Image (cartoon, rainbow over all chains, first blue to last red; front, side):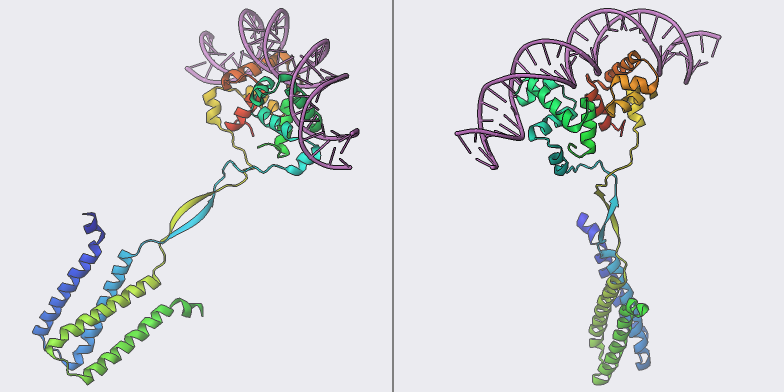
Length: 152
Length: 152
DNA sequence: ATTCGGCTCATACTTTAGGGTGATTTTTAA
DNA sequence: TTAAAAATCACCCTAAAGTATGAGCCGAAT
């Protein structure tokens, strides 16, 4: 049934063709086609089938898909670490790691557990981070680090 | 000249039509069109002009455009407060204010000074914020609030 | 081989943050 | 106007964060 619906246009076209040929036959019987009338007949036929062809084409043509890029504000998932800043401030890999976890709201104890080191180690890292970022508190560090593109 | 280019297809069609009519005239002169040959002639004409019509339609039809919105990440400098979330969580104006300053790395004492209230007041606000955001620390609160679009 | 930076850990101490409770005063909305 | 919500503040106590200092370990560079 889907096939029938899909090729409905083709069927209609075929049916129309048959009807037209019958019509032509009838016209042939009805009038004697004279030489001068032939061009008119052929012209009418040409126009008719041209229109039929156009109609058929329009019906069957698949719509061309045009991709239009619409600018949609998306929370930029892309983050590019500013390694220049990182080097400039002299922040080590481990310190950056701590900074990232800090930004996620983890306590020093949490971070220590996560990295399998002692609480004191994290405290030391934190202190160095604060020194290098020239801040006093972790919330400041996180804020500044985000602005400097050190963390997402 | 643009017009000429635009309607080139139409011109070609018209030219083809003229050529075909001439051909028909020549054929007429060449052979005596007998009754039995007429249907074949008409059929060929029909098919020819149908194809011509299809070709014409395809050439002239403007492509049906289907707009597909492609999400392009744009760095969103703009921040729109999610008031729905704010209402859902029951966070008051003052609390949001405190939250914003908290996100900037200010200590409770700093915030108290900034808002001309006592440290205890800020502590109370903080506690309520943490309750409503279901967090334990200010760093968590800031992180969560940013994800919920409560603060920039 | 030795110096140096990075990572680790510890102890001691201070400051800040956070939890709990209770209370007063505005402000807002029914 | 009156009840509810918001904002204010205090006191006490605990937990977490931050400061200061010293030290051992290890790998890379000189």
